[in-house]
Image (cartoon, rainbow, N blue to C red; front, top):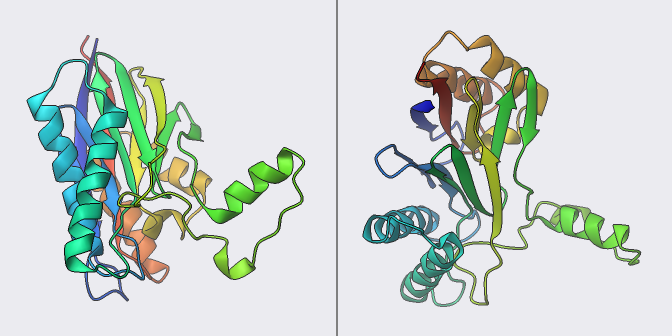
Length: 241
């Protein structure tokens, strides 16, 4: 059997005037993750907040055998509807990477370029795939397609919460083991450090509490310029024995 210790931490960074990241650390529901309001559009904070609150409310109403794809799509519809009120011309949008704990398995739902990592032993694994133009082009080239993109668009999102058309949601199942570390974070962190650096920080912090480790990770992002909001949620998977 396992037990969860968790923490969440965010910082506005050194450049942004507003924190448009949001996070959830709900041990009672077993719901953890982050959402990042899409830059360049108005209402990013509102989009991220509504996305998480909507899924939390749906899960509270139907806690058994939840349909996470349906929940995420309903949240996306709600964000799209709010966008028609706040900014009819452009809409509003957010990324979303969340995990729902059922027994000893973490069910991860993912849209956008926020990320979920797992550290097992000293090996870190990125469990999610960024939904970016660069990644989509790479996948299409692997299928033999001759496609190109402008460098300026490489990080542009190809999926987001709040988009008007039907949303494809990535789902992952990760069976947890005692000693695992699960990190959800926004690109204000991943854009400023390599995966191995994150692995080292998570490994070095095994004797620390989750919040202490998160503060070190966010502090490093700030030290390197803090050009974006930096937000993360960290789970420690402990044995009950």
